[in-house]
Image (cartoon, rainbow, N blue to C red; front, side, top):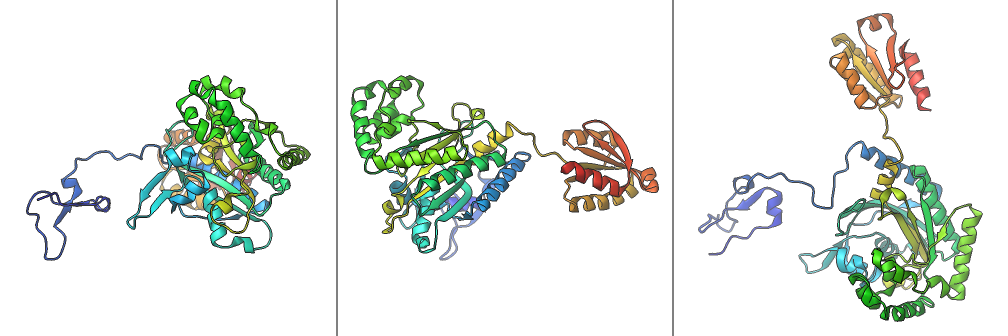
Length: 457
C-alpha cells in the first residue's frame, strides 16, 4: 500500500495523516489525524529567503515615506487603485515582454487547481492597465491619474536593497501623450522624493523612440552586436539577438568598453520622437529640474517607449536605482484594448528609498518619558501620559528605579524626561529634564505641555 497523500493545506493546520499500512479510516471519511509536532522535529522557522520582517524603528520611516507620498499624490490629483496580488501569467508575458528577465527568470508562477497559470505580480503597471481596460475607465472624463502602494514578487538574488518580496510606490497618468504630462510626472517624482527626506539624488532621462523608429535602431544594434557579442557575458550573448536593447543595461564591468561604442538611440529618433523629447527637456528646464541625458537608459520592460527616466542615489552602492519610469503608449493595445490609452508612470522601490532616507536622517525620537516614583505617582502619571498623548505627543510611562528609568530614556532617544514623586505632586510642579542638554526645570503640568508643544514646532 502506498503512502497516504497529504497536502500543504494540512501542514498549515499542523496536521497530517498517520503513516504506515492500515491507517484507520471512518466509513466514507479521511484517515485519523495526529498533530504534526508528534511527527516532525522541532525546528526554528525563519522568514523565507529574500523576504524580511519590517520592524521598529524602521517602520516609522516607512510610514513617513508613505504619508509624504500620499500627500504629494493628492496635490497632483491622483487617486489610489488597489489591484490583486495574483494575476493571470499571460498579463505579464504580453505586457512586460516574453523575453525580459522578469518573465523568463524571476516570476513566481504556478498552476492553479483548474489548470490556469497564475503569477504573483512582479510589477504593477500591467495590472493597472488591465484594470483600466476591464472597468472602462477610459469612459470617464480627463486623464486617469492613479497611484498604488504594495508588495511585488521577483525571484532575484538577494542583495543590498533587493528582496524577493519587495514594495513599490507607483503612479500612472493614462490618457495623454503630451510631453507636458511627462514633465509633470517627473516633477511629481522629484517633489515626492524631497518630501520623503531624500537628498543628493540624480535624475537620468532618455528617449527610446516609438514603434516607427525603435525597430530600426534595434536592428542596427543587433547588427553591431554580431561582431562583439561573443566577447561579452552570457546574458549579453543571449540578449544580443532576442532583446538587444537589454544589452545596454548590462552591469558587467568587462562589457562596458564594448557597450560604450554601440550606437545611441537618441541619434536614431524619428522627427516626432525627437520633438517630443526636446519638449520634455524644455519643460523640465522651465521647472528648474536638473537632469542628465543618459543614452544607454532603456529600462528593462518591453512596454516603454519615448520618455524613460530613472533616479539613482549613492547610498545604495552599485545597485543604485531608487525608481524608474517612462511612457507606454502601446501597452493597452497589447493587452487587448480596442481604444488607445497612452500613458506614463513610475514605480519607486520603497525598500531602497527607505534605505536611502535612513542613511540621511535620524529615527523619530520619543517626545517624553515619564518616571513615577511610588504608587501614588504611578496613578497620577498615567493620567498625565494620557493627556499629553491626546495633545499629539509620543509618551512612554516607565516604572522602576530612577537610575534604570533614566538609562531607558537615553536608549529610547527621549527628548525629555519627567520625574514625578510625592514632593512634586504636593507642590504641583514637576522636574522636566532636557535629555540632550541635561538642563532640568520645575514646571506645572500646563507649562510642561506648552514647552513640549513648542519644541515640536
